[in-house]
Image (cartoon, rainbow, N blue to C red; front, top):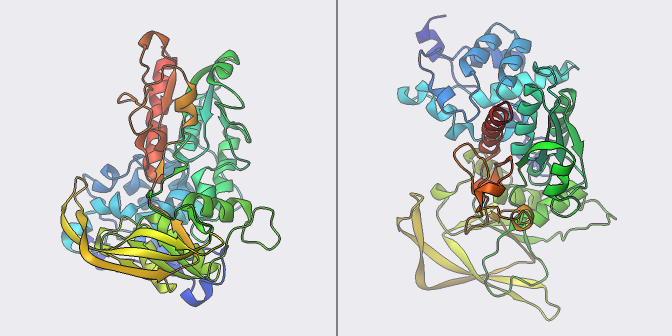
Length: 471
């Protein structure tokens, strides 16, 4: 097939559940994946560039043209083997990573005014194909070297680090504070976007590599870093995330029915709170407002729709400035979510029982761009609207988990509460003579990031720690 013929193939469209059906179920995945025929045809669109921009856009450095070439030949086992050389969680990344801002954003088709190759769809396809064949083949690993390393947190950064260190030959133990492995992949992302069974299969793949997981263990409370060192762990990687919710500090945030997206999604996704008679219930409002414009806001508002609410997104900028993936915004609209952009909460009002009943919203307009490049929202003087609500979910970001920063003596902490690291993600100490073999990555360093950027940190830290421990 010539390059011209490849370029004439239309980008594949992902098969999806209908909006009418999907709002009735929280546990069925909206995106249904590609058929084998669709995957092979889409892979044939790749022009096999001499200098593939897609690889430059991939934070974990997957050899994208190589795995696409294998799909073209229907060598799906080889395709997934190539991906696993770089990615610990291919089925996860194929579903939730913002490829449109990373690998696909660098595809040469963009310069040709055509849609990029659907790299994320194809990564998901080969990962799902392997799982559906019934046997997950772990990547090659070096012989065990007798050294132990500890990982604090089992989110994407921790899992990526654990996988690479296991491949290097280390005995890896992951300590997780919650009762489930997966961190934000389990508690923060709904099953209609990322099914738990998919995450569990990826984790089982790490177990096959020899990684040990311990749940219900809070390092900094149940165990100290000094305890881990006393137990013979030669290095520690901190991937404890950013699970501390942020609020706007406006009147009424302490009313019953106002909660963080973290609490809301954790209760529903991890604790079964939406099920009748559950010991950890969640309020099921009929008129729900979700404040924010990121992916977590979309996850929250789409969950509220599935719990029977009339749900509204309130966002202080316009839709064009929303950081959420375009796909998630479109799915929310299809599912009946109302978008109230250029509005910002001023306060929440409640009844005599302390329950939220109304949200007062300041109408906004867009001014000059801020440091992020997005136009800053500016209040329109005298324009305030009132909205009747019985539940408010605040999804305006999170702060770093404070346990490790507050319990490890001498650890250098930024004013935002993140762990300060060098360029190789080694944790910095105020007294260098007391520094430990400690690295950190993901949200505890970045303050908030995508799954794939957290994984990139895990891989980078693993390479650096391996080099240090190998001297």
